[in-house]
Image (tube, rainbow, N blue to C red; front, side, top):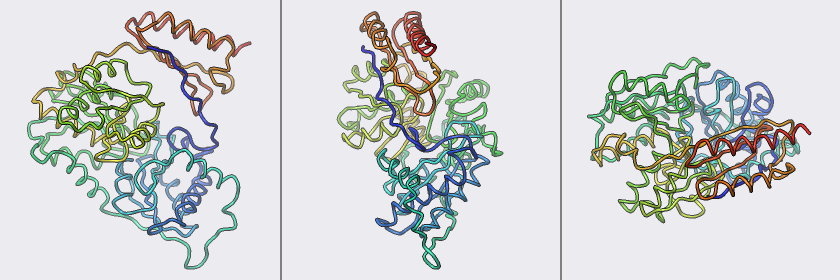
Length: 460
């Protein structure tokens, strides 16, 4: 295995690896910026618009109300109509955007972050997240003041309306992705909605398919989203599964695009294992295009080994589910995801979908007539060590004196027993080091040595 320095992050004023994100009411997540983003999106779609309307959805954060209204005002001020769907998972917004033939979809969510944060993610009319170049174009429109002279008046301004049946539409869509010959009648499921956007959708999907559902994390108050629950805290479903004797635990994150599960024994099963299970099933039915699974550089090397043993292969992208999707689309693949639980079944939806992924996993369990604990043994997980080094100012790893040599020596010492990944954070002055290999003590030592090189250079 080899070491790797990830591609350096493009400097952005607003957008990060997954939209705009920050503490609500502090730049860039202010109503003023949200209004400008709304105006820029409307400006970009207006000339090519099919129906001059944009869908806006959100999760359950308290700050969602003010950002929603600011975005809607900005869009309407450019002569484009708005359709508000209220709290709905991010993949639900992608689905509604395409099914309503909208020109774009906007999600107000900071995903797995705490409630005081918020974010803005944008989907194009085809349901896919905007590419980097379009996000750069939005930034250029905002900071160049190009839109200031373009203010529709009188009957040319847009209007806002609500879509009252969006949740029902999305529930029907999800159920239709589950094989009609199967039911969940024999399953007891523990479901953690993270007090987030799935709280009105997920319980209905699983119960209407026949499952007995023990629900937790489904009482949002605007401030408890992701708090000690959901995909970031799978220990909660683990404890509950053991307590009630359930067959499986499903933990979603705040905006519903991630899934982490636990088996009937309470053991955590992450995105890598879910991908291995589902990829094997797709390979067996000849539905995995080009026999290829797309993951990021963070996925465990054990997943690559498992894919090779199955007769498939795995390719890696930089961190971020959007880059997984971009690789899938450009190269003709149909399944991929991240260790963190973003799982993209491109034959069904255009982005990571936690509920959809759970349904696909459950269908494999039914098809194979095996408990999750047995299916999850498909791959061996190698130890991973993650270290974050905070530095005084943002700098790329290759610019640090002596770091490239230190990395080369670490790689040589590790040999084929593992790999090292180094990348800069796209949002803060932090360098992240991931070491992976067969010997946890060895990779820990190598990672800490590299951290020391960064810290010494930062102090000098």
